[in-house]
Length: 94
Image (cartoon, rainbow, N blue to C red):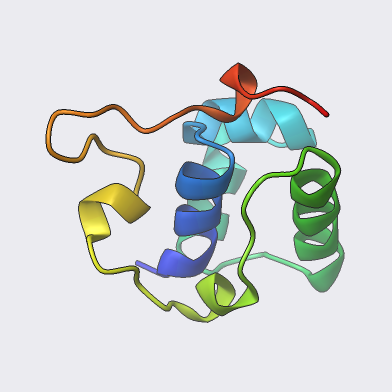
């Protein structure tokens, strides 16, 4: 699995593949391909970055290249030590 977009989708936006697809006008199958590094364009990445920045969500370009945070479960949006990862739609839009 290409972790770059999967990390950004789950860690930054806090969304499932289906939710992320809905946000960016793509199907869940397309997002699944993106998560595996297939069919992703620089235009797509620019849209993801712009949306994250506009919503004041965390963004690290290193995540695009597969840098894994210390706890991969946390990076992929799973709960960590019993604490749920905050979802993007629960954050103020700024």
